[in-house]
Length: 104
Image 1 (cartoon, rainbow, N blue to C red):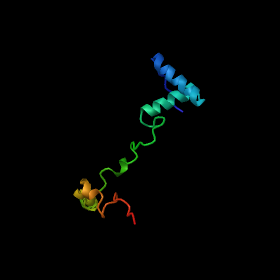
Image 2: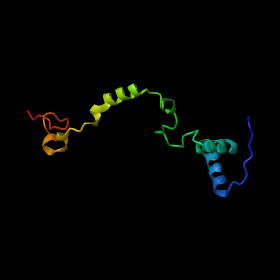
Image 3: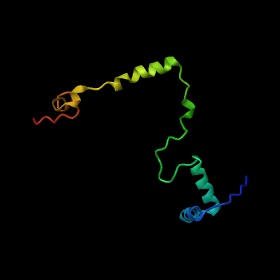
Image 4: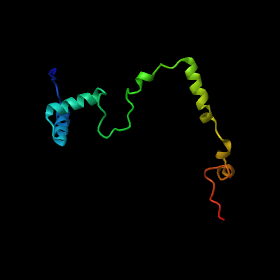
């Protein structure tokens, strides 16, 4: 286990460490380490569950040009806008998912 001495804690940071230690029931050392890991992006902040972080980094730049084009061709349909859904008449047409239920 490595050791590191950190000097220059201001009262606000000391209070935050003490509050976290008390709330979690952990030592001041563990609380300080937790805050350091969060600040360094190694731990998500409390209540932060929707974080991508660097978990997808391994996939960056691994597609060939052909794979990229194949993917872009496959999602092209999602780039199209159905203009009829942007009018009141089209919004409630028989093709629309928003149409009124058949009263019969």
